[in-house]
Image (cartoon, rainbow, N blue to C red; front, side, top):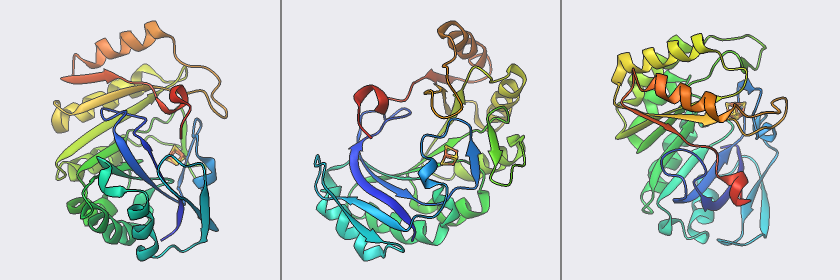
Length: 251
Ligand code: SF4
């Protein structure tokens, strides 16, 4: 499998923010989000950085592809069993479904629950791995800020809705929408109504963008509160949660 890094930290986004999490970050992504804070994961990586020990700044480097045995050995060395979650993140993990199928059950056997962070567009790939996932954390990408790698624009609503139906086979599903100053009312309303049509009780996170790359500003607080109130007319569990890693100064 092509991996970028394996390290121990705490969850930085969504309802499990702050929970001890072992991150396995894969290389390769077929989207280009304007606010992406991991552009180094867009292409498959030549090498993978593996943290030496939990809390340590030291890491070693192994060449890709990384074997299942090497990834498991790294997870054990990082005290994987003491984490609440393993986050399979990226890049886009579902571009390597065979790797997820092999890695997720092996890591789950150590004790943590498997938390899949995905762009939410690869429904066929999810179909083959969803039995190994405890929490599907899917983005709902909005065309105002997201393009495909080819440059092709969204909208992605219909593809996300199909993905969400497959994701519901996992024990837990969380939907995240990143809100920027450019996010439009119409695209948000369509996303919320499509989520509600599948399951209005799902946790839906409105995440104010952390300024990065081409996105320089956050949405105003009043705008976020107004959006949360409007979303709550269609959805039962709307939360506004910013990214915590920049506040904590950790990865
Ligand atoms: S899907 Fe994730 S890794 Fe890919 S460009 Fe968007 S934020 Fe970055």
